[in-house]
Length: 101
Image 1 (cartoon, rainbow, N blue to C red):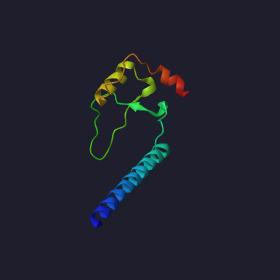
Image 2 (tube, helix red, strand yellow; image 1 turned 90 degrees about the horizontal axis):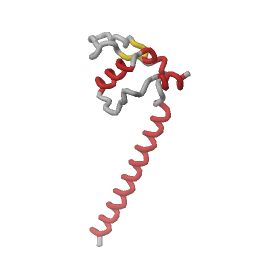
Image 3 (cartoon, helix red, strand yellow; image 1 turned 180 degrees about the horizontal axis):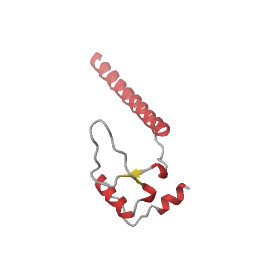
Image 4 (cartoon, rainbow, N blue to C red; image 1 turned 180 degrees about the vertical axis):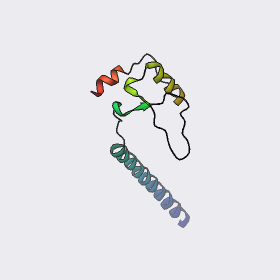
C-alpha cells in the first residue's frame, strides 16, 4: 500500500504542477503580448532599397524607403526576401495608408 500511495501522490503532484506551470506560462504570454506588442505606425515604417541590406559591425544603416512611399514591387521583393510566402502582390498598401490616417 505504501508504494501505491506514493505513486498516487506523485501523479497528483505531477498533474498539479503541470497545470500550474501551464497557467503561469499562459498568463505571462498574454500579459507580455498585451503590454509590449503594439502595431508600428505605417508612417514610421521603412524598408531597404537594397537587398540584402548592409549592416556593418558597430553601426547599423537605417532603412531608406518609407513604407508609405514604396512601390508594390519594392514591398513585394522585400517580403520575398524576408521569406513571407503568404504575401499577395495584388494587395496594395493604399488600404493600409488610408486606415492609418
